Image (cartoon, rainbow, N blue to C red):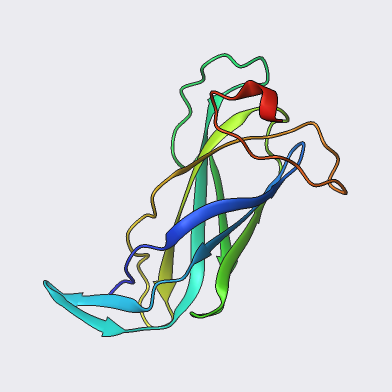
Length: 137
C-alpha cells in the first residue's frame, strides 16, 4: 500500500522566488485497513498554494497551483525539495506526500507548512516567520 504521511515539513531556506524544504520520511506503508508494513519511499509530491500576495492581500490559491515531484532516498535520509518560480514576497501553504518504489499511488499528505518568501537573493540565508509576523522577512 501507499506510505504513511511525512512528518515535520519545514522550510530550510527561503529566497525571493524559491524555497528549500525538508521533512522526515515515513518508514511504514498501509497494506490494508489497520495493517502497516515496512516500505522504502522513492518519490515525493510537493504542492503549494498562495495565501497572500506580495502586498500581503489575501489570495484564494488552490492546492496544486504549484507542484513538484522529486526523487528521494528512504529513511533515515531526510526528504528534500526545492520549489522555484514562486512569486517574490508572497506567502504560501505547502504540503508533501510520498510514494514507495513498488506502489504507483502517493500516500497521505503531511501537515501543511506556512511560509512567507523574502526579498533576499538566493546566495543569502533568510529568516522564516509566521504569516502574521510581517517583520520577520
